[in-house]
Image (tube, rainbow, N blue to C red; front, side, top):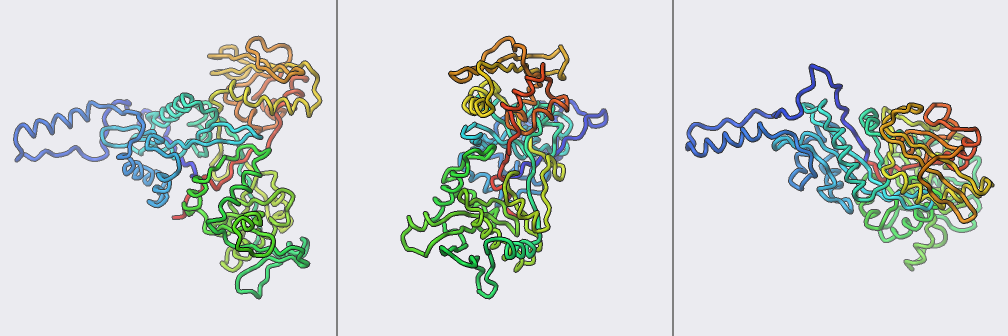
Length: 500
């Protein structure tokens, strides 16, 4: 789901209220005079208890769902009842996946957590996605949002989660909790007819058959029959195979099990799913699955996710041509492609007269991340770091120190906590050593570990921006080799809301 965040108002003397003052969104219940004296006393005692009880942060219960939905509708004008039900049906969901601040019977603030397994170049890292952070209007400015984020982090650490992820407009709220911008929006747009014309004139011959009742993409000189057609539900294993094969070397892509794939399709966020298959039609199911070479999820002229077998770019063009042909028929003049920053299809859209957008912030919305357990993540990345050390032909032995500061700006000496460790590379591999950082080291704040380890920035850019200090030029050179900029990407299919 798209992470949406209701921004808290600034704390001023005119808006700040004591956190434990009881507030009512509706007038107190009027006790009829006709009831008996004992019943009247009990009703008054309930009202007095509600006045005394302050806000309480706790895990949500099934009975809170209706109140939570009302809060989200007031804050975001969504989700629809169908989308909210889809959230409840997500595999692994429990009511306790939501944290709420209650005040009396009211839900004053809310946050939803969704567990993920994120691929980091072969490493399956546990992560939690923070979504739907919202505070009711009458309770804003009391710090409820920050309290919910802090509680979510504590829960994640207790469960052994290494990474926190979110997509939000409330950057200051998360930044105060040590989160950092990490990830970029990456998409391309171009005219549907311009793309078709470019494919017809320059590609191997991906031409829509405009005379047919249903569009088919054919080669000018077909060697093997190629068909683009809607996905059949029994063909889901082929989709899973293609996606899993594409995970090698990827950063940020989530793992998806079969039940999760079922949920994604049933959710209805995309109106069409096409597959591209090679060879003649066959009644044998195993042969049908083997013939499928790619797929595309589409929503109203938007290519949400497109995947083909490695080394088969012409098959991607067939899928793009089918989407463009549909868009032209439905008067969607523009086609949008959501794809990883290094996807070659961006170049196709650019050559077709379109534009490519790759930016940290679009419409005020950014991706943010936080490393909950830096030491564990570095240990888990040992194989990746050793491979980079070898590829850069760095000497052995070699040590690079990291000085990680909490609660202070870089270069200040009054950090609340300072963690010092060294990455030591020998002929046997890498080991992590606590203690003095040595001569070659990098100094950074804990919040900047996420963009460093996940490859959001070039290390030199972080040094130039003052987010990292290097002891020597050699430390910068080693750091560049061990922590390069990466095509970190979070596919939008997992977060896309069902249409209203």
